[in-house]
Length: 319
Image 1: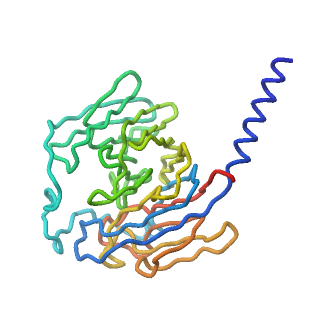
Image 2: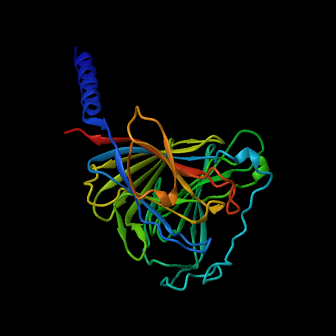
Image 3: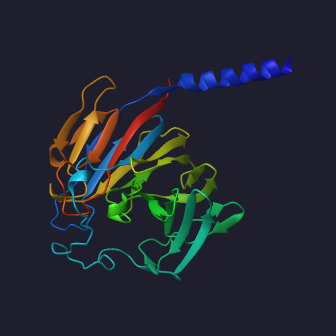
């Protein structure tokens, strides 16, 4: 009888949780600016809505990937006022350079890098198991596949400013592949550029989940649900629900021209039962979307294999 009652209460709690989570749409606003520099993040696309509790983020191969014979990954500073070193407008903080392997299991390898310089002074604690490390600027996640193929990097996170980059497991002919657009998850604020202030990170490895605590007291759970040649997918949940006063996610990218961009167009669905729409990046100012993909349909001479980034499956707390 006790077991039956416990089972009933479990089903009831699950049903209540499902009842208060409802599909949601979000406002996507374009705050991009023009640039001639192919190494500058001039694209900013904010996602905003009140009450968001969950979403999925995916990195997907660009639709033209099978058409390209080789990847073009070399940096292009021809239109820039800097040459790849520290950006002239950034502050510079110096650190003792280092590398630490935080986890090396059958499915994932997780590495933390401390860079010699970084533009922010934050030393965010990263905990995995019983170990806590401070001062990691770049958290790398490598996926391991069956056979003799080396682990391939599929995710990076910069704890000090909250930037994420993800990509599918690259095809063997593309080597390590390349990242393109980056994004922020959490309460986005402007501190010279959009950032998310992370207070601490805790990593669980079975399954792989990153638990973030934000400086404002909120939290996010980011689960790596898939890392394959088809996609790398993150399931993201916020606690408490976002209040809508600030973006809960921002895509940052580069666009000079349709054939020289990490994102050149936006594809979205306004409602779950409506058709997809696609427009050039500079033709979109503000849209409502239940599903939005930032990508390219024209092969780019910049980071040719870099993935499209899709945000969808938004849920909000029911009212």
